[in-house]
Amino acid sequence: DTSEDRQKLLDKDAVQSIVTGLLDPPDEISDSLEEPLRIELLQLATLLIRKAPEELVSHRKELIKFGWNHLKREDSNCKQWAFVNVCHFLDAYQAPEKIILQVLVALLRTCQPESRMLVKEALDVLVPALPRRLPVTDHKHPIWIRYA
Image (tube, rainbow, N blue to C red; front, side, top):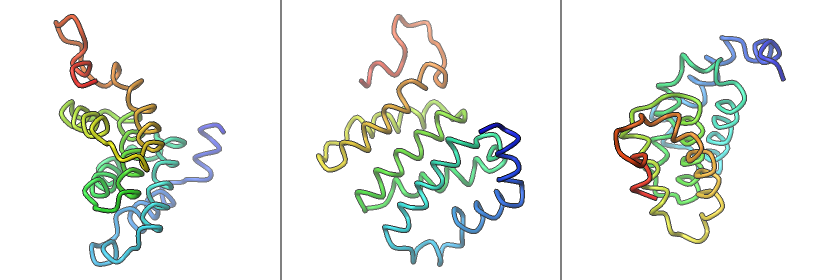
């Protein structure tokens, strides 16, 4: 699974097609999707972020918008998969401190028993990334420790 192998599989045209056609379609198409398809698309986006982050760098805006929009949904499963997606995004790419902390706090506040496994998966990705993604302060403890 080398970078060269990924580039053969995911050339710029393929990445562009996936992002614009599946992850950033027009609102009228996006609004008509059922929850199971939304979850599959979140899983696809997460897999791409995990396995080919370099190939997706130029599409970071579309990727975070895709995940973030699903965090706002009422569907519990969709929302939990969106947390997993956004945490992988935050692990792969730099984001504003405010966004990272907002996701962390929202995950820590999630208390539905049916979403426990996905919340754990999201936290398992996000927590190790916190020291890399949040700036060091003059305080004795890192800023994110206040929320844990």
